[in-house]
Image 1 (tube, rainbow, N blue to C red):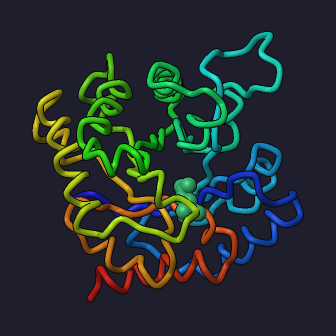
Image 2 (cartoon, protein in one colour):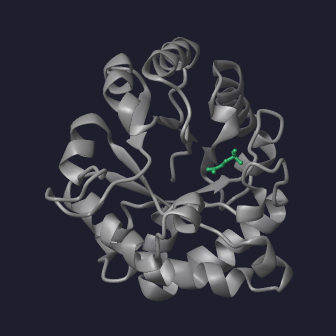
Length: 256
Ligand code: PGA
């Protein structure tokens, strides 16, 4: 059984004071949720404060990016052991990092290996652009991203990953894939490939989140899909009301 997992990606939002206010509010609002994994991913500058504020709670903490080297002359980067001090999760290969900061399948793969070597759980983002979607290239493109991400990983390492399938055209746009089409892509472009690369057990063990304009009012229809195990939430993770609404609606949908 895959435990549902909803994570909030705060992107480049919130000062430390603002991040603490949100973390404190979520801690209180979500204290009763036990059937689902929850995490928030603040900016690097707020990681320390937020990880202290959420210590001992049911809300985990993730970073949004890191480099793969242990340490060294890499101005502006943070290293896996630094993230590990403050977080359990690490978002890798978000489409914004691929688009604006030159991330490739190769850098994503190197970061995944570094994360696993340090006991961090990678949340690896994949998904097609609007052009690819309209050209009917979604499945082949997402498959190629899966091959790139998992290159050189053993089955036992592969099972430690969380994937976030995020059609790029649905991120921050208010548009979403339909739950049925997201589920079909996850099945044919992700789980079928993992089954071929590894085995059925591995393909069925890996949690796959949906991402792209997830809101309190549409979470339920995604979480009930058989291959969707949660969500990676951007804009709607920035207020207590919206993010706790998403989680509570997901819990209710799964209980109902
Ligand atoms: P969004 O972002 O929820 O604002 O569309 C999702 C994401 O980028 O992970």
